[in-house]
Image (cartoon, rainbow, N blue to C red):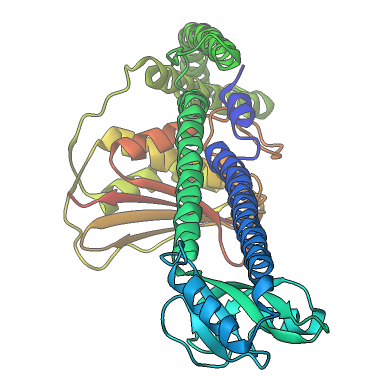
Length: 482
């Protein structure tokens, strides 16, 4: 299984921004629990308010009717006896700490009160108005027209024998303490709801962590495997579905490592086996080329043999470099190099190939003197040769290659541009992958750029490839000045 297919396996949908399982889970559970808690608090508050006020309503109405029935005997006597009895009842009223007992005139004037403070007209209060209009006991809550205080009051009319209204008995209580108590109870219910919500939130967060943390570990290792770290393993934490997935990924990683090892050993073995016959073929072809008696057709055939043997030799060298990178034997011999000099020597080495391919190379040496930079001269020459070879091979239809050198205070860069068809946009991110050849019909093994990327990266540099304006492919190698 090649590295490209493994990367595809672990990068499906990788370009899209993924939503977090933890975020979605927390959002759904939190919203659900919060909704239930709010509904529960709302229902509890409604029930408490309704039950409390209904109970007070019933009790005050009963108390007003009771007081009216007890006092009905005094209605048939004189008005003085009525007032005297009302004053006596108000003075001896047992619940004056919580209730106020009032005796009202038919027009709503407070004549006698258990508080000892009479006066004021309360006819506009809802309970008084309702009792006078209906002729029966009525209880209402609202604001006192006399004191502007929040109250609940029950009024019961007192009738003469002819049915006319002699006055009203009224029982009044303040709602300040009751409403404060209701607020405290509802506040306590809200705190309990918040506590339940917080408890569910924390437990849900802890539970989701047991899912997301192993998945994050799996994702991290899967990305390493996709990047070529075959054999990487994930620590198994649970014996559940995630544990099974962990075992599967570990097993796959191990098999990929074994396959990669076999592939590398095979490539290395075949490359070494090819080296000897290719050296012999190249040597004898060059020797036979000096034979003056050879015909033109035979000489042309020898040129073909030499060219193809050189191509195969380069392929073998790339494969050997690849195996060195894979098994950790790839090293750099760092020294001081002069980049313009390195590029010019490489161009001279390749000049004959350019002539045979009918490709013109445009290069202007820099006017200023470039300082030396750290680098492995042999490896960087290999990079530039590879880039020139690709430009000649894939951009030969353009018949022109442009090479340029630039520098900044912190880096030096060499760019190689051909005037060929370029690379499709969807293939650009992949062309540095090992064994990737894309849609091009040119022959090659697909590892040259991967080797170049490794060499440049180990120099702490960058290898950038993009389609140039006006057509063709631009490859730039940037190396640090220090």
